[in-house]
Image (cartoon, rainbow, N blue to C red; front, side, top):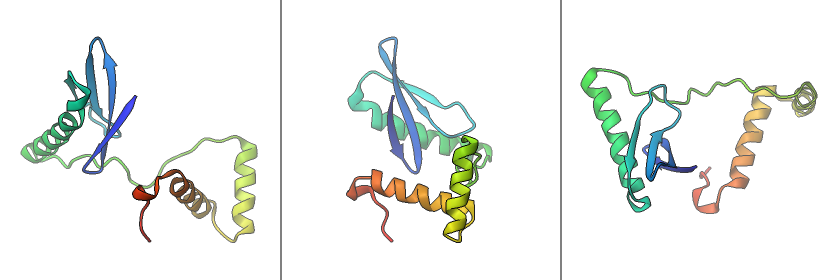
Length: 118
């Protein structure tokens, strides 16, 4: 699977039966389109997102903003215990410790050109 980004939306591109199928990810609605060429995928995804946003406006629906900042994560009991203890050692809540760990990991994984400033 390849991913695309546009206007804070992410999409997937998968090859099925001789065509590329694009889908907006992380929204409650199933929103897809197809295109024939990888060179056209980004443009098709942008049109899909723009159409989704225009349709939401037309019908008076709030566009689904996929991330609310809260999610459940299932981990092993041992990892949970170790993370909680590490957080306490640093004087942080487990939530704050996890948020910092995620931010640090994303910063290390991102090419310098994509890293957030500040």
